[in-house]
Length: 527
Image (tube, rainbow, N blue to C red; front, side, top):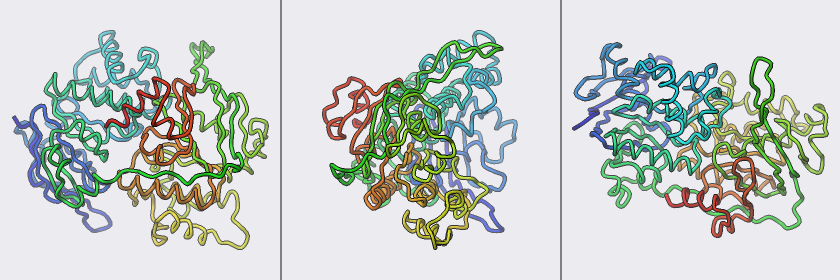
């Protein structure tokens, strides 16, 4: 039986008096208990196609064709009819959980709200159902996290909450838009197993949108490859992987980060280091906010990074990777010694620290969230120059043009706003913003996680080229172990705030000593 039948779907967006074709006559279907994957690069029309199924597009969208859900036409359907389908029969998991979760409500309240609305489930029964859902998607100590707000969870944990919310009402069709983007490899494997169980036990169908073809090979029955709003190739997953016919499909399948960074000189100076660094966050309860315990985010972390070296940090969400990086940048307080070029940052006054900021930069996971939507590309990149000044005799615009060329962007685009760029281009802008100040130490916090595989390869090559050219020290955080291997000289493995294993990249990948490291490698490299 066919659950979803899409025929000749087209979508146009009105912008500045003209119409942009986003989807151009797409046709596919999803059967009962079947997983159909839509794959392609950013801008290919995957998400627009998915949102069209239950009319979730913006007001400037014009939609035509036919979308049948269990024989009912969704295009042009009444709002009442659509409301009865959304959330109950068709659930969505979106790529960026922070835009979907209410920052003012606890996790418990948001999940219970969904259960009350769709199932009439309230009180203790609803609470137990929430705990069960959170445990099912891999949230540890679920009972203790009920009163947490979205900002108190890691990116991966927030995504798991979103998945729990989507699964709460037992949907017949799950539309998953990049659901594993922010997840570490072990949780990713758990989520895929969970989705596979639901498909098998409850006959749940899925429309799975992703740029990660490794995941597609694990979960999808059929694949539709999209490019520029068109489906250029479709077929059984095994057939597509074994014998791709379209050049674009071949390009996607061949895109993965390889190679290794430039070897570093034995006498390279130490740029940044920590000794016995510790970050504990207090747990406060009651009216007087008494401290009743601590979240031990980082315990006794010691590491050093030399000029031209990349130290990779891997581990599950919540293991302390980003917290350690924030401590090294002095963006959060910590105990122990944090040094930059021999100066103990914890002993410096704010004024003295500010003078070092140009030498220490960070590139965040979500380029859209870290770029101001009200500023142009040129203004974003030049902001650091306004604060720290530019080299004598050089104009800001000249420096912005030079760095845009260096990161592979056309300087003619410098007056555009972030929303006018693709995800890969926004990440290049974020890198340009960091690099324009010519830093010595750069924290790269999941810089490739939200990017297509083809763009990911480009960004890895770009980062290696910049490191080679300027002798940059990188602290590279990622849950994608293949990218870590291509970028890193040395690797730290973190779990629950502790460094459980460390060593040269080849030794860690080829002969891991710790059980947890072996588990990570198995989950990441066997896909």
